[in-house]
Amino acid sequence: MKFCANCAAPVVQRVPPGDSLPRFVCDECGEIHYQNPRLVVGCLPELDGRLLLCRRAIEPRYGYWTLPAGFMENGESVGQGALRETLEEAGARVELGAVFSMISVPRVNQVHLFFRARVIELELAARASSGCTSGRSRRRGQRPAARVRSTPQRAFDSLRSPVFFPKKPETGEIKNRQRLAKRAD
Image (tube, rainbow, N blue to C red):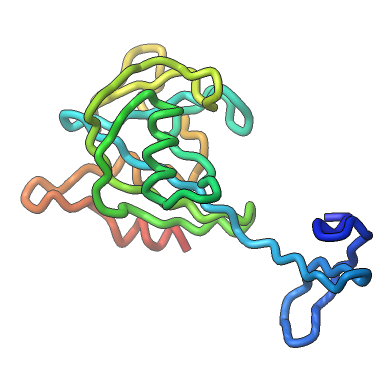
């Protein structure tokens, strides 16, 4: 940040009085600019025991498989954001379930929040505004089509655990949840 969003004067980075972290401060109008992590919201859309994945059409990680997710917009709830991103990126209307995971990614100042979801309607078509070229549904543990590796290249390491852990048949609970929690730290 170089200029104040309030008055357009140059800003300096320093610890303001009463604070403990460096912030961008405008000496002209006194505005303190706080920069906080961005929230990425999405879901694990499930249909008949399969998860819907998207292939990225933009950088970072062009061509890799990922869950439908994106940045939350101002004025929407986390649930509304997850629904919107799933429709935009995968062409799927879903019914949200419980929160599945929350992953802190401090190196890029993001928090990723994923919901379980059930696919209600599916239109596997890329949207011009989305970051994905196509949606794809595949059974957990099933070998995908020949053009995709047995374990698709995931766009982000933070997605590795949630996508491929199967449910315990007796409880429906996700296996290795403790390992997932440790990895998120």
